[in-house]
Amino acid sequence: MSEGASERAAGGATGSAASQPAGGEGMPSPVEELRAAIVRLGEIALRPLPLRAWREVTAGVGARIAELQARAEALEQVLVVLVFGGTGVGKSTLLNALAGEPVVAVSHEVRAFTDRLHVYHHADADVSFLLEGPARAVAGEPAVPRFDREAVVLHPHRAAELRDKVVVDAPDIDSIVERHRELVQSFLAHVDVVLYVTSPEKYKDRVGSRAIEALRGRKAFLFVLNQIDRVRPEQRPELLADFELVLRGMGFEAPRVLAIDARRGSAGEREAAGDLAVLDGLLRHRLRLAEVRAIKESGLLAHVRAMVRELALAVAPEGELAPLAARLEAARAALQAERAALAAALEREARAAAQRAWASAAREQLLARDAAAGGPYGLFVRLLRASTGGIPAAGDGAGPPPDGEARLRLEAAAARALERAHAVLRPLGVEAPALAAQQPAALAVEAEGAVRRRAALATAPAPAGPWRAVAVNALPAAAVAGALATLVAALLSDPRQVGLGTVAALLLVVLAICYAQHLVLRWLARRRLERRLHAELPAPAGPAPGASPGTAGGGPPAAAAPAGLAPLDHALAETSAALGAAAVQLRRLGALEEELERLRARTLRLPRELNW
Image (cartoon, helix red, strand yellow):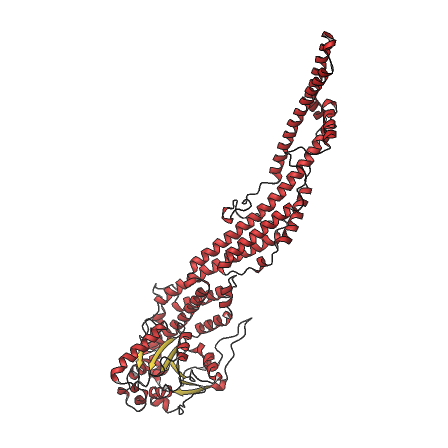
């Protein structure tokens, strides 16, 4: 077996062992868990939520998910190291110092101001994926443009220790040519490690800092401070400390900087070239197949975690998703309470209108059937109707409500529901176009019509049978008989004492008895009416007008939307459902973030020179 084959076999065994989970057999490997996490991230990120910030942060997210999936499928590919840096920092010199005889023998003269991607790879390594675009197209989103095939120059070599690594020389990041920047940007999806090269004059360069900050958390970094020979030996520790301080300010916890004099390395003075031997040993000997796979897995994991954190920070202060999910649930409960309040308001108006209509119908029917009963009580009722002109007695609550009052109350209820809903949703950044389209005045007109139509369907109880004529005339007939007996007895004993006053007194007694009976019958009729109203129009369980949503009783309204206010009820129900779904999605995102953190703790320990 050749040296390269033996090394790949040994590295493959190590890599397989490194990929096994800590929990033992039967558990998914970290790679399988990571691929499953990407699928779940796609399910979460591609689902629209009613949060304005979510819509903004997930624009074009489909292409990013496709890129992650493509990288997950390519974990067995070679490690891609991109040499990154500004103009005049000595990248070409460093590449010459790192090249050695195997590469130089087949390489071209590395020119300054590189305008293409120069790929140094082992002759047996498959680098065809580097000639393609970074991500496959995603339905509904524009595809990432592929770069020109002529922009990639391949330089094969036979260095066995670099079989699993590819070194790519990129155009200067501070190039004024827009095509150079687009070329590097389109190639970044393939990169696993960024070898950032700078100089004592440019390590604080703003262009370089922006490039590092854009990639931090997504790529592993190797920091090289080249041309260290331009700094006096006694000043070098302070310079390195300052560069590390700059990197800490960008978010790197414990950055490691390699100080190199690449010119001496190119001239063969490798021992005097600073940390060149460390970098060369890392690339050639220390990064074997197992470590290469671990770096690629860790880079992909870091990218996924960064994307999850980006989503979390976009919608929640400091990325705390659980409190936001709880607030969304509370907002959902508040909207449900407003639905209950709307249903209760409409039921109150319908009940009031029906009560007035039914009371009026019941009294008129009571008078009509008692007048038709005949006898002394029927005569009394006819006299009563003639004297009152059919006007309902005070306290009956009969008659239709004044025009416009119900409409105004319903409009106020709708406006109050909208105002409270917006007050709940606005601080959360929730977009609710269905609610924004509602017009309380138009809703109230339709709702008032529904109330009146419902009241018009009311009918009073049917007239009773002949037995009522006997029942209602029993007491008045006894009163009339008693009055006549009294009058006859008075006439027989002393006719001179019987005058008009006596007759009037007896008549008033009879009328008083009849009116008392009428009051009792009217009270009984009202009781029957109330029982019927209670059976056919249950009292609304929602809050009274002016009550806060949190005081609503009886839970959400019935499945059927309240007539007349149905558009507003539907809008509230739609927004409420969207809030519930958003809360579930945010909790899933939080659970995914915790899972990725646990997965990160199980990854292979990587070389300390790498910075994440």
